[in-house]
Image 1 (cartoon, rainbow, N blue to C red):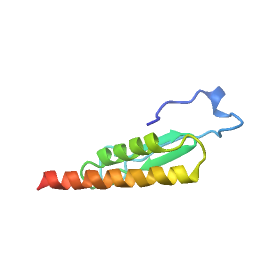
Image 2: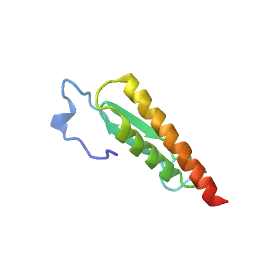
Image 3: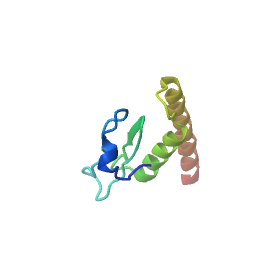
Length: 102
């Protein structure tokens, strides 16, 4: 997950536009459960789902898996595959969590 500040002299390259990232705590929590990845060409935000338990864990897993699996070039098919892998990972984790809760 990328949280580093980009030096001003690197912000305006001819190939990658300047970008920023910010999330908001929202109305349900006193802390932010959102996570994001800003690793060109991948930009993604995972909502921590305020009001649900462990939203910060789910959103962290989502951006971590997506960042690990996403292509480093503009490739729609590879990105689609990465999203599919993320969905499968989250399904498996959901099943494991529900089994542990029983």
